[in-house]
Length: 142
Figure (cartoon, rainbow, N blue to C red):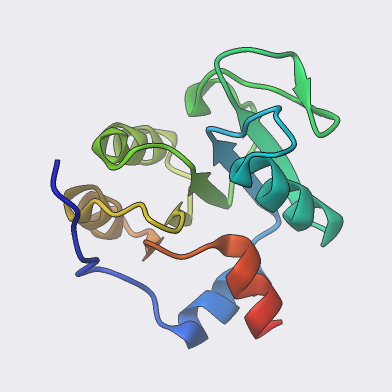
């Protein structure tokens, strides 16, 4: 897949609103490795009051939270899905978010863009952020 420029994206004011309405963040691809971006970003968000829900194929706990293998397994409401996976996986993540029906924000981290998935999420009523880091944006805006 070629690199894409995000044609669907939230502006800074929308991102500020996103952080104000978000309480629970499912992190798709949250690594247990403390040196990985996904771990550092999730830890930062957790330290700033967000409930983190790890989605990872192994491990039982990460950052002291129960690990789920998929979005479908999470038995409570999710506000945001924060994605640390390759762009070609995003359409499947968008489908899983749509199937859940409770996800309000579809956020692809820095360097991750898939406009097809973003359009799916937007059409389903989600706010969409692509190619931005949740930690950087939170630090900058709040």
